[in-house]
Amino acid sequence: MSAVLRPRFYLLITFALAAFVIAGFSKSYYLKVFTGLPPLTLLLHAHVIVFTAWLGLFIAQAWLVAAHRVDLHRKLGILSAVFALVVFAVGVLSVFQTAISNHVSPSGLKPPQFTIIGFTSIGLFGAFIALGVVYRKQPALHRRFMVLGFIASLSPATARILRLLDVQAYRDALIPLCAALFITACLVHDWRKYRVVHPVYAIGGLAIVASWPLRLMVGRSEWYFPIGEEVARIARGMFG
Image 1 (cartoon, rainbow, N blue to C red):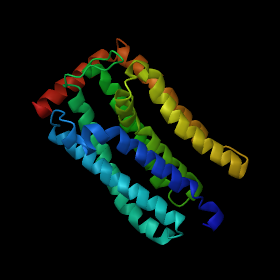
Image 2 (cartoon, rainbow, N blue to C red; image 1 turned 180 degrees about the horizontal axis):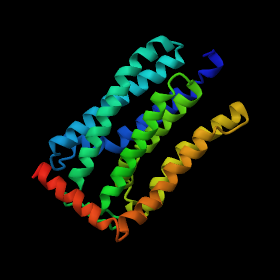
Image 3 (cartoon, one colour; image 1 turned 180 degrees about the vertical axis):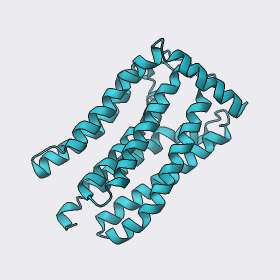
Image 4 (cartoon, rainbow, N blue to C red; image 1 turned 90 degrees about the vertical axis):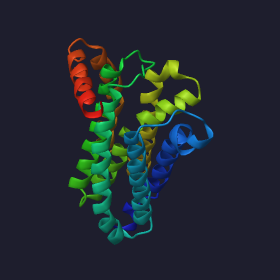
């Protein structure tokens, strides 16, 4: 890649996304020692730890590209892909555990119904990251899929930030709006730099934002209820 194809925008958006996630989990995890909140399960600890490791790798990868060290970026890419796979696996297990929790979402979804929220987030994350790996030799596609994968994983952090701001009553509108703001930044960057909006951002971004009202509809539907109950049944067998 030539220098013109290594925009520092991707380093900046990576730092912004990382800061957003850290802010979201600051009270419930990173600064938990000062909050006195109830202890987390071992699985949730593992989830945050592996995601934080992947987050560090993501930042390192963006920095290497910005520093014109694509050779190291490609070598580190193998480790990043492995950690993304671990994040996906632990994320799926965490969704199963959610099905038997006592938490009732402000959206009104009971734990078994709420699993559709987690499954969609982790599914979109996995799909975009997998596409990023598949198209790793096509930088224009690779970096956009990777950023979309990151954005797709923001809803847990967003929900916690809304809780800190005491605006959970509006979460069903604000969670997709936060994702839309990051996606809009990507679209604006493409337009300013290339005078065209890349279809990966346009289509992928629309899928992320539109998935939120759709997953709420699915979670409240009669046909998903038995699926959620089956997830809860499996979870009880897994976690007791």
